[in-house]
Length: 245
Image 1: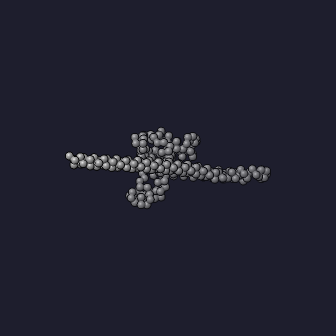
Image 2 (image 1 turned 135 degrees about the vertical axis):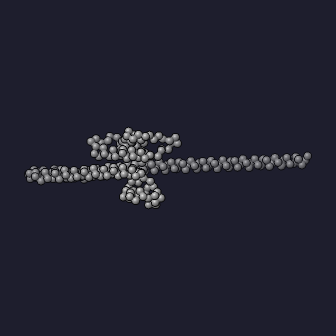
Image 3 (image 1 turned 90 degrees about the vertical axis):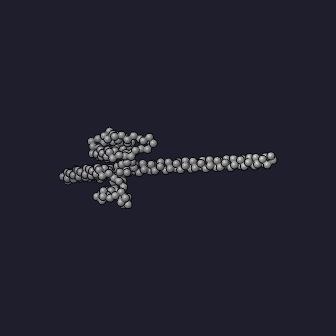
């Protein structure tokens, strides 16, 4: 499935199959980044764009994928927790409650599966980290006392580092989420600046056109008045000649 750019220059709307391919690509990236044996080497949205093209035939660039996913995630958050009533509402009632006017149900379910799978795997990682942490503490209970006193400073530092693997993972995940959110915010700000510049240029262009139109109207008016004056003088001269004859 390909989505060529229209002759007018505007990008075509995302189809349902393209959105499903995007959700699948996002799931593949998160799975490989968090739990895969090898992390993706290319940037996040370049990976997702390539996955959409290779597995779904979707020709969408990284910026398009990022913007579309951001909009989907925003609508998903608004509907989540209200989905039972949402599907029974009409579009007008949805808008009155400040909910998305339309959201494909299969896309919603697929996104919920992705979110649920991520939380489930995150919980398993936390449980395994807690189990490893408790085993380390139990082993240290039965170490000889002389060994513990001989290197008190190092043992305290190591114990503090080993006892908090869960905190380290949480910090890494938090920093990654913050970095991703910061990147999306930066992208939105850049897009807003571009739109503002485009709006200013368009306004200046319209103002220049209006000014040119006004000048053209004034010039035509002057020409018409001059022509009328000449015609009036010519009529007077013809009348005088007729009177003499």
